[in-house]
Image (cartoon, rainbow, N blue to C red; front, side, top):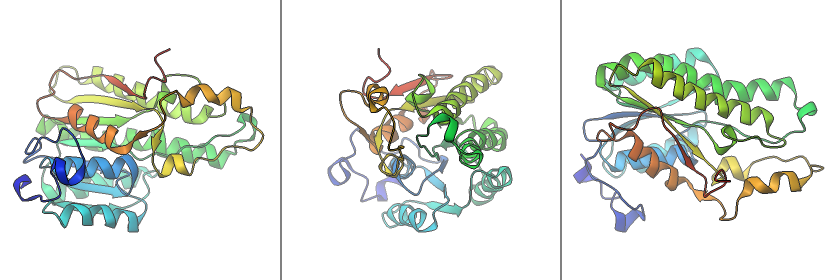
Length: 269
């Protein structure tokens, strides 16, 4: 299939390190695939031969992702839904199995972010962030693991530098991404005697809709947030998609239980 993908060459897409055929005969499920890291990941995996099941809450954005893949010879099936609901997570995985008969890669990318004065964050805001950032990866993993065990597949969760360090005004976000780190490590231990692999990537700031729409209270002490911005600016969605492809690749058998920082040095010191 990959030989038919006109779009998917270094010269035409500016995507470095593409390895054609690396995911041939593999099926990948990507959440948050309508934009940002999720879209870049779906396209990258299709670039390298995977068949895609893509999921997002935004129907129009998701359709654009599917169009990019299918218009250039790839295969993509989509489902629109709210990952904050356990039933949706299980139903989506079931639909992917029905569509393709197998699952090899689960990329938990969907997430939300925002800054709040700790005492002013509402319960609704808190519950929504927990449901999307923490509950959804948990339930997707629950639903997917029986199928990944059958294929010797793997999971790549998107954590954050915020899950590895304390940050002012983003307590709930830090909590949820720290939970993703521990979800990854714990599953890696529970399934250590199998061939399934579970890893996570912890990005810093990435130029996506999430960061573009990031809300900050007007009266914060910005000096407290400045250290989290780093010195090298924000990364690009393709930076993370490239790393996801590396970690999820069939030959990356030595990578298990790892948390990869990709934050341009923010957590280095």
